[in-house]
Length: 194
Image 1 (tube, rainbow, N blue to C red):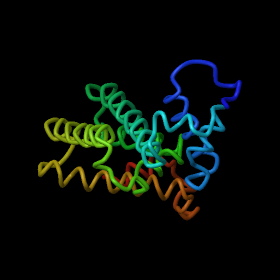
Image 2: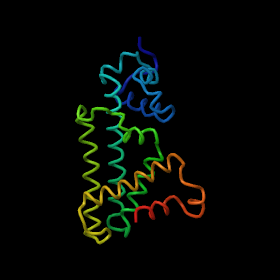
Image 3: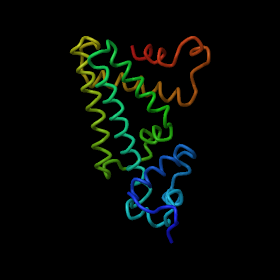
Image 4: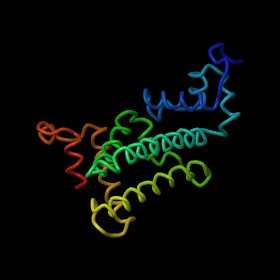
């Protein structure tokens, strides 16, 4: 029996949105197909028309997250690539803001909760698109003299590890107070990646 709260529109998108809400409020422990169905107001079997199991739902949520991250980073790159002398710092800041805006989604995207990534080609395609964008940004910055010469892949690993680790420490409030009392988070991030 379906609830009266869901009337029209794209059920798959509504289920993904509900999954994101549940992640934000309750974390991975609260996320299930049944809870997502309840949040949307449909029968507990309705999600199975779009997702074969919880892993398929996790893949869809992660894919949507990677799409949003890609757009965020691309927008920042386009905005600053001809005007900023420190594109990497701006990109890093947009990545951190993305993480801080929705920690549940961010943590899921990089958690390993999606057990068989190869079973979800749309997820793989989207996450690889983010890696390709990072490599494009690095090559662009190298050509402008804003990054050192070297293998793009090596620089990508260094930068991503630094920014991603910084994001996780910020999300978990792990920076000692004396580290951040005299500087903004943006200033600290810039130091971390330089």
